[in-house]
Image 1 (cartoon, rainbow, N blue to C red):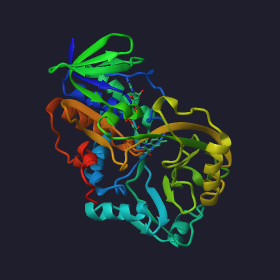
Image 2 (cartoon, rainbow, N blue to C red):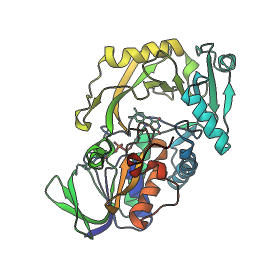
Image 3 (cartoon, rainbow, N blue to C red):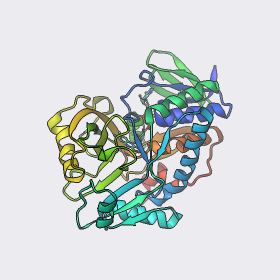
Image 4 (cartoon, protein in one colour):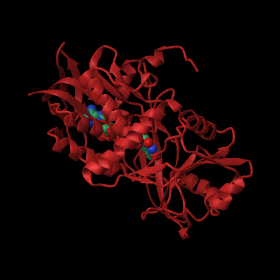
Amino acid sequence: MRYDVAVIGLGAMGSAALAESARRGARAIGLEQFARGHDLGSSSGKSRMIRKAYFEDPAYVPLLLRAYEQWRELERATGTSLLRITGLLMVGQATAEVITGACRAAREHHLALESLSAPQIRARYPMLKVLDDEVGVYEPDGGVLDPEKAVEIYLEQAANAGAHLRFETGMANWQYDGETFIVQLRDGTEVRSGALILSLGPWLQDELAKLGIAIRIQRNVQAWFTPSANDYLAGRFPPFLLDRTGLPAPLYGFPDFGDGVKAAFHSHGELSAPDAVVREIDCARDIEPIVRAMDQWMPGAANTFRAAKPCPYSLTPDGHFVVDRHPEHPRLVLCGGFSGHGFKFAPVIGEIATDLALEGQTSPDIEFLSVRRFSKPAER
Ligand SMILES: Cc1cc2nc3c(=O)[nH]c(=O)nc-3n(C[C@H](O)[C@H](O)[C@H](O)COP(=O)(O)OP(=O)(O)OC[C@H]3O[C@@H](n4cnc5c(N)ncnc54)[C@H](O)[C@@H]3O)c2cc1C
């Protein structure tokens, strides 16, 4: 059988693209190298932040507005709860990128964003230790997604719409014969398809390297703690991002939704090959720095260590994603380099990847995510 589209890699992006392709009536197959529900890629860890006032670049905002709609549509269609609006607090010096960038995105796109002084943050969240030279922005539309559940729901949606799903089926290589992509599998068999979406997460490294794009795979550790008091329960305390001088990296975290307070450094950890990410946790190296940072910001939150899990980031040179058609193969879509902030976009990336694979074009402006930006002189 020749498929219309083969999606390789069924993490957040691939599962969303597969569900969307099948929903549009395409004969679609999804291949995943690991078991269903595995936690070895970038899409696990119980919680992912979503926000609109995007400090990384206001160009993401139209994609975010679409993603918010799509998360709600998916919940309605499946009767599930995936997105919890909690509000979100970002704190740093007035010149920190998280503050200036969020304000810029909010200004340009007329988004709700509240500026807070240090005393105002302390009054609202007395449990937090805010420094005198810090300020905050509070985004009421900020929230939290459930990543494992979302991926599973997309896989179910894909199967219900007729897609074929195969797990523990790794792609070894692919070729194009002028009409058809021939996906060679590690078990020696092959799959044929008119279009190909490569959503390989960290394992897209080699494919992007062939195009001159070097992505770095970084081991990031997420940790969970039982707090000493109820101050950090969901409802009393929002997800946060703290960009504080002296910390190894910005610290972010989530309130206790029932399984402890979660915290981690954003983009902090050793680099490795995708298959060589160290899975064991070393308390002195992985947990103690997080506890020290939490103690100076949210005393009592890191009272008892519960669990930790490493999760790889795929860092592009500019921190922005790669979502584009392959320069030599218009029906081959590359989807990767999500640089530690891609999950919230999964539905819209799934939609765009499907547009590109099946229609050869998409309407959102994704020039800033193109392959060719890396060969152009920087504009800003
Ligand atoms: C600790 C951590 C915290 C994060 N926090 C946030 C956050 O708060 N908000 C946010 O928006 N984003 C966040 N992110 C980023 C976000 O989770 C990722 O950008 C997103 O999950 C990437 O999804 P993906 O589908 O590209 O990759 P993955 O989930 O890694 O999926 C890729 C899949 O491809 C499969 N694969 C690879 N090679 C092959 C092959 N040859 N054959 C078959 N299958 C293959 C892999 O097994 C894997 O299942 C965070 C990431 C991490 C690690």
